[in-house]
Length: 376
Image 1 (cartoon, one colour):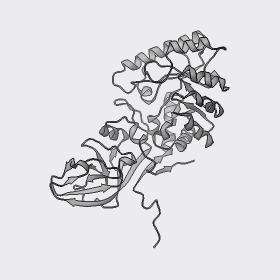
Image 2: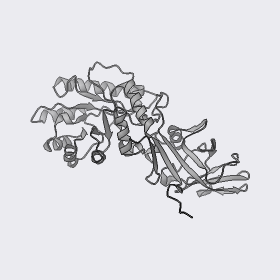
Image 3: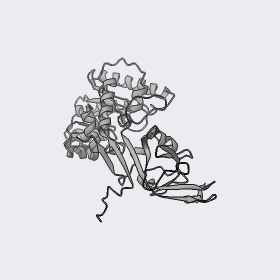
Image 4: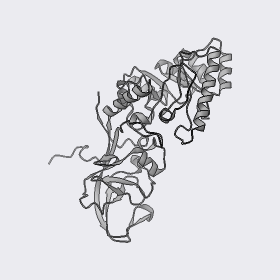
């Protein structure tokens, strides 16, 4: 008898459709204009290198990562496209940005000085402004002070900010940030630190969908979609027809019939009310599945919703398949994706777990193998 391969005995896997990712990028580019595809955090859990390559193939003019190390990894894999580093970096990372030809988003005068000292030029970075997020970015007075103290005139390659509440039903905060950002750019143009040809970047995925602002600026705009390129809905009420690219499945290991009054899982938070067929599925919170979810949370078993019973364990979860009599040990169940007419989206799982829509895929652990279709 031949030994089973690792693939034969896999307990869970995530299938990633790179053809769909390329199609999403093309669709967004056609509708919104130039985009910088955000692939930070291992491309939201979908896989950094294959997703970055697919995004560029789909028409993204730039790639965005969170850290210089992510950018260095992509350069090491041969990616020649512009790579933007979104998160604030320590001054020690400035030399790496220069050597790897990365485009940092400058959030501090200390990093700007280190970047220039390392041989970088202002046109090779984006000035990040804090228009209301209170996280990364320079406040405008600090940016003006840094420019005034510079020994040579500085004109940045781009000006950016980040929206704090683009996914909120109330767009008051978003409109205020737009107004602040436009005013700041006009001031920078007025002192020569930017021009009408300076690229500006403000919208993330939710911002792209909810952007109703009019601007007096003639500058080229670079959008920064993350969730949208993976087919994840970033806004609770506004949609755009991108295609979900990830399907997450796990296998039923055992099914047992439990009598009424039998507890299931840690803490005995679920107790059977009838003779119940309970299936143990080979996936748990160590794989990235949320540990605490609402009572409505389900997986798809043979195209039907089967509710999770009790608390999710580290390596497995349990579901009630009493009303799915043909469910069998060895069946694959769907955690994210669709079976027939039934589906569970990333946004749905996020809602059940009360987490941001970016969390379910970003939290996928390395022990969930990725299976890619459409590799080039």
